[in-house]
Image (cartoon, rainbow, N blue to C red; front, side, top):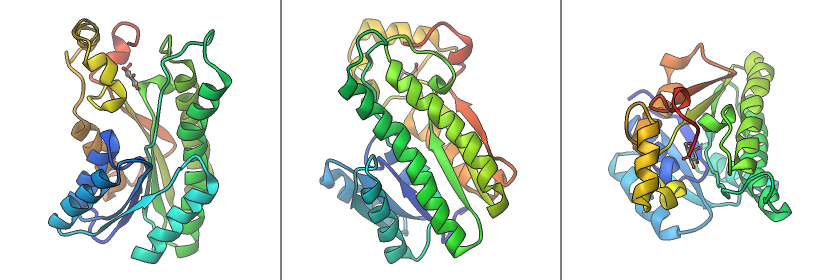
Length: 255
Ligand code: BGC
């Protein structure tokens, strides 16, 4: 149990990659704050799964695109568990719109939920980590599209590109405090964000064909990397991104 006694916050923690991260960190012994916006019943079910693993979890309903909600979430973690050791900025959305047709509302929504949340989540978690002492880990869930254009998903690519530079800049700034900041860049993962692709057999076939490993990732295959980065084995990694993409970036253009 690599993370025994550690306290982790996972934003967007009750579905998709976030849910798998919650379970994996709990398997490694961490207590967890599960941030979510919708589906309290899914959060409650996950809390029970974490208890069954012998750890504690609390659900906090917080819209991470709002600083006041982020502050409330960090305060809830400190109140419940006394500290924050691991912050996973995972919450994310996409609109599948291009540079030509993205509306102002779509742009603002994607940038706020994906990038603003990660920026202020990093800031507030780091302030708490500095206050309590002993360093910490901040893990930003980005995408292959932090670096690789996805035509037809423009605002999403911008937000992930921003997270790439957040990871690098915050990694450098926070290094003197022993706070390590790392990005995890998944390729295509079988989660609700990809539902439209997964429910279209022709599109799914095209996507799988573009992935050298021939299939989408399971969320657990991203969560295991996050758990590694949160643990002692990753003590010399900061200000960089680790990709888990089945080789997709070396294949044909994104889908
Ligand atoms: C996007 C998916 C896309 C995948 C691979 C992910 O970051 O959310 O829509 O299929 O990257 O291109």
